[in-house]
Image (cartoon, rainbow, N blue to C red; front, side, top):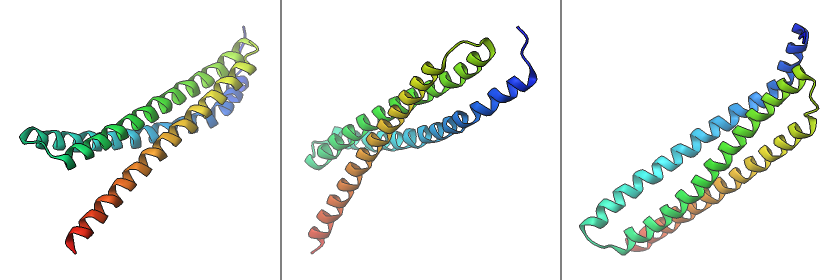
Length: 148
């Protein structure tokens, strides 16, 4: 098999868009793991306070944090799956071009699955943000009512 430099250049050009997408997914994973770390940190503080004695407010906030952590974990799983599928797309682009295998349908299928996983990840992230915002507003309203 004789692979020309121009052929490799063409494949690299095709793979650039998925590589940029992969960079975006990696950045999103950083955001998600940072949100999860903050949830875990707050959960540890509340768990330490609950060890001293039971408190309904701490327990209810902890329950909300556990739900948020579950949503973020799901978003992380979907984003990671998206990243893996994008890597597979890039590998199949090179493999298909260098071996002349008809991988077009597999490439398209993997790309569509990657987009579905990315969309799902954004949905779970958005749901977690809504829950966090709602809890923050409720806590603010309670503090305001107590101050009056």
